[in-house]
Image 1 (cartoon, helix red, strand yellow):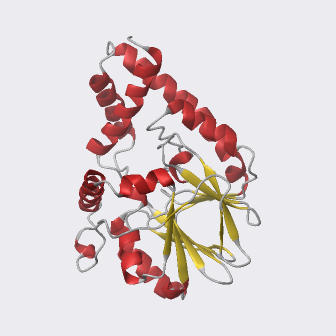
Image 2: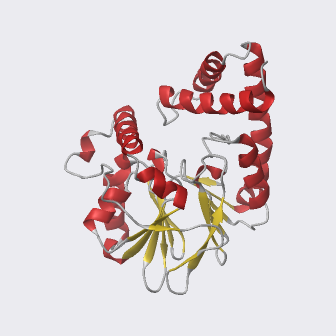
Length: 301
């Protein structure tokens, strides 16, 4: 079953934010962990929900970024500046990206673009959400654990969507926080965003099959529970195979022209999904990445 409304998921685990982007709050005895940085424009919603649900932001001691894309790191600058004691975790590769001036510029500009698209920019007035070089933290990778006191998450390296992607798993709840390393549960579909390396994305899915899942905690469009959560990795494997075939077909159809194939794929996607949260020109860049990977691995059409 798919859930997109903010609130308590189960004892000690909350979903906060909006339908197009959310964060998770995992509570331990010593502190709480916020998982996923989300989009900056959901900040007013998250702060209001925390007040409504009686969540004390001062108890947040740790913040885990699952990969470096702008739509998964937008809340981090505000929380780190507002609560300097918070320890921020991300992969080593992500921290390298966060130190790049060009990457910071792109993150901030894309965040503004999506906030405008979602008609949420006005609500951010007065909040300092822009990334700068003052946000630092700790690198984590495969096998590391983040302990909250009686509750902990294990880190899993899950590349494919991006080179810096990691996931987190809480074994008692059987909660998997896979970010975009797994399919995005948009409406009743699953969109496998295999941006960087399609083969790695598919290998990551095979790796995640080993984890029993009662709560599939996605970064976009909420979380999934029950029988659908148990089968979500398998469903993503199936959809990833289909999308790879569509990309290869578009590449051949357009005579090996990467730009034309990406434009066609993007046009078809938005014809079917006109209210998808990412601006069309940004998603066209994602399709272009995937087509380029097909070009690299298959050669000329």
